[in-house]
Image (tube, rainbow, N blue to C red; front, side):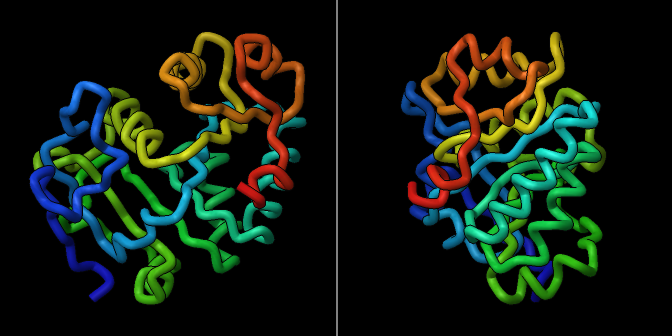
Length: 208
């Protein structure tokens, strides 16, 4: 059934390899999943965006989401900010795998009708490191969720990281940890570009 929840302990062979940290410890003791875990066998592109997004970046982000859909690039993210939600709607019209990581427990979570068929078709995997006590998102849980999703991604596309935001700090932490961070073109993103982030290219992503 599309809403059946599977619990995967860190001691299980099914626990995702990407969730093991450099110190040899798992990011979390267990995860909860709805959908086909084999989706994680594919190289995933993490997608993130600050809650507030400038108009010029919004247009570029729509174009990037359509390009990812056309190229059938597997995408992982929280899809919680307004721009992330819009892009999820665009991606759902394609055929590429999508991993959604809510900032809450997925036990008894109401699954949107638009996701149900995709879960049955092994196109959507819902994944969470949060137990049943975390029934509602908080800013702290959302931050932890972003780091969780990033660990499962090969590289990250950040549509916009507002100056001084948690998304900007997240980008810097990821780059410092060796993760490749891609940004859309625009003056708003230049500070992070100067610190080591790269410009997004769909041609490069599609051939990785």
